[in-house]
Image (cartoon, rainbow, N blue to C red; front, side, top):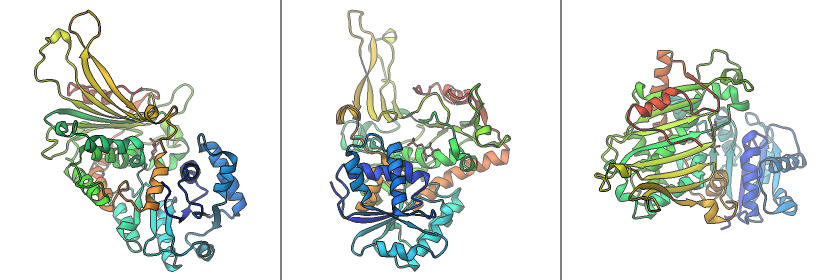
Length: 478
Ligand code: BG6
C-alpha cells in the first residue's frame, strides 16, 4: 500500500547506518511500489559532496547492502531521481537555508536523526529556529537512547523542548522484525494460546539473541556500552514486553505501549546470583574482545545471561531467562515459551515426558514453531516424540522469503504513516534504564570482571549453570 507523498531528511546520510540499512531499505520499498512518485529524500551530512556524489554513495550502498533488488538498474535510477543532498553543519549555520528550500509545504515531513545523541539537541533546535519543523513533522531517533537513566531523561527533555511525544519515533529495530510483530498476531489473534499464557501453564520463557560477529569496528562505542546497554536494555527488553504484556484493548500506539510499560515496571530487581557476564577471548586466528576494543584491561561484557521475574498475577514465579552475546557459536535468535509438563502421564514414564514449546525464531530464518507431542510412528508401542508444527515465513510467502521486509523498511514506512505502535515511548525507555542501571552499578561497585568464554562457544560455563541449577536447560544455539 503506497504511503502519502513525503519529504524525508536523513541527517548522517553518509554514515554507516544510512548506508547499511536506511537507504537500501528505502530502495526496497521503492521497488515494492510503496514510495509515491513525488516523495523526496534529502541526505544531509557534514561531508562537502554534491548530489551526484551522494547518488554514487547510494549506488554503492545498495550494491553492497541492498540484497536482491527486485527492480534493477532502471529502478535504481528512478529511486536516485528522488534523492538530493545538502552538506550541513548540525551545530552551525551552514546548509540550513538550502535544506529549507528543498522541503515543500503540505507534505508529510520526517527528519531521521541517524547521528550520535550528542547532536540531537542541536539538530532539534535548528529545525525549529529555521522554521523547518512543522506542527506535524516527525523525528526519528536511534539508539543508544542514553547511557543510563539520567542521560535518557536529559535526552527526552531536550527533544521535548521542540517536539511533542507523538512526533518522536524512537527506533528499536527489533520491533520492526516480521516475527516480532507476528508474535502479537499469534498471541492476540488466536484463541489457542492466550488462555494458556500464564504462570499456571508456562514453565519458563527463554530469550536468546546470539551473534557470531564480534564488536567489529565499533569498539570505541561498544567498550563504553557492553551487552547490557547495547542489547538487553532495549532489544531483549522489548521482546520480553511483547511476550509478557497483557492484551492491549486495541492495536494502537498508546494501548500497546501502556501495557509494555507495565511489564517493565513489574520486573523485580535482578539478584546478582542470577546474572552471568562474559567476555570473548582470542582464538588462534582471531583476536579476542580486548584486542578488538584496544583496551587490554577492559571489563566490559560481550555476553550476558540472566534470570528475572515479573511480579504480577499472570507471571508470579515464572522465570524469564535472557541471554545475548557476541562471537557465539551461531547467529540465532529465539524466544522459546516452554510449557509445563502434563500433570500426569497416562503412558507411563517409559513413554517419555515431553513438553510443548512455542519457539519464535527471529534469526537467521524467521518463523514460529509449536513443538507438540505425538506417538512415535511405527509398531514400537506407545512411545512419545516431539514434532514441530511449523510456520516459516519464507515458505508462507515465497521461495526465498524475499517478501519479508527488513525491520528498517517497515519502521520507516510507519513513520511516514504516522504510526508509533512499533516505536518506544519516552517513559518506556526510562523505565528500562531504571531496571538496568542498578545491575550495571552493582557490577561497577563490586569491581566484577566478566567470565572469559571461547569464541564460537555458547558463552561461559556459568551461563549453563544458571539454568542447570533450576533443573532446566537452554535451547540449543544453532
Ligand atoms: C544493534 C546492536 O542494536 O543490534 C549491535 O548495537 C547488534 O551490537 C545488532 O549487533 C543486532 O541486530 P540484528 O538485527 O542483526 O540482530
